[in-house]
Image (cartoon, rainbow over all chains, first blue to last red):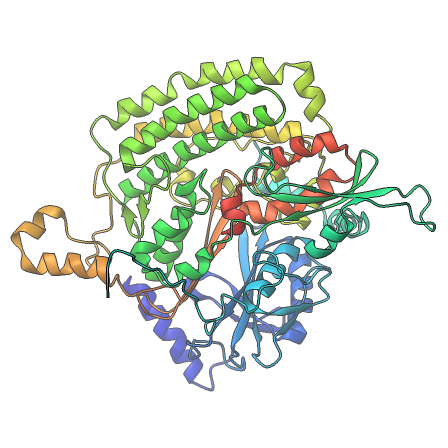
Length: 177
Length: 440
């Protein structure tokens, strides 16, 4: 418990000191929160990083999901990475080395698009559709950018933080209010 | 039957993966058709002039079909009786559980995720708890680790037995259905004894488990385990040895290891191709590195191998549980961290502070340090992961579950490509999707 908090504070402190160099891997900034490896490419660098990961043994793209940081903008990111409203988080698995890597890509609110990993990992097809469905992030180069969980004619993207949660009025016949 | 990670991964090369990638994108097995279009095109389509021999028919299968394991809908493009392209349509069970999870405290979160994969609920709870514990930096006591292992392996038994039952029924072995459900009920009885509930246990909590093992748990576990090997031999006689059973499954729905990896398929689908990848062995969590078991793999990656891998995994789970019974340590069953764990019941009667503390944990929950974490476990269907983002409050800012069924479903169009429509049920059944987890 105590160790983790100290570590988290230490990384924040590093980000605040300008002379501390940012650790790089695959040409992009890397952080290691709680022992996990997290890469922070820009949208332009994303495909190159994923290709480099794949040739480095990370054969499987395990997971792709979106995160909406609308109400939590002050998260800790390595220096040089501009926080944006959305993030696309992809997880990769290296079977030979038994290690994981995570790639967090910043996606701005006014242009919610991100390059699709479909040409490199066809298994992301459903996961990217889910991120589109629930966050409205459009993946360029995806063969079938349609809703997957919500009905096709649904309006809005439910996992966005500013999505109004609807309520069905319930009438209690016996009780007068 | 067993292999280490190095041999499994070393047998594949990046070149083989690349060619699988090309093959997957070129095989044209995936039908990309909106539901509105599928509605319009459904039924017989006269052959187009430019397509010789192209008498195509769009057919909807499901979502209410009894063999589609819940509410899975398949749009099939048929040429005669052969499936050319297909598309699984999901979302009929979508209830926004990830959105709900953002509004529940970490204490309440387990009740939410346990309803995702209703055939193996303890694994979702475990992934959620491991994710939150990583963020908290809490190390769960030894006894809790072993209790979690015991319960998860019991749950794997019940899940695989359920598969044997439904798989048998799907293929017309109706008596198998009764046998599978009978054995599963025995396992559920044990889970009920320990957790109080047959399903949706809410037993594995952040910081440990909900309650210590009750008196007589060891005898109850042995009563479940002892008759099982004999029953499994019965399954073998009933199914594995039968020529009809083999005819229906062997060579049906074949996938290679490279294709499975490219499609993100995990669990028995990946192992049925001969690729020994099991998180319990290769990236151990809990105390799986202290028990002895084999990773079961197939050879051909067909429906039969997927059936056989699951059947063999029942035996391995029994092996693990027997070791857990021997090695179960004494000690606390939840972490002795006052921040996460409510005070014991007896303390509440004596101390006003303990009562307030108890009340606060269950109403407000506890605060989790800011950050993100991903925790993964090997569920009966494959890698079940939980990606959690905390903003420092008492509720997860984002709680994403990587459901193995959801990802595994993508193999369906490739498995069904150029197969007969009668094999659809066998193939869907062999993928063993649980729609509650697919749709979340």
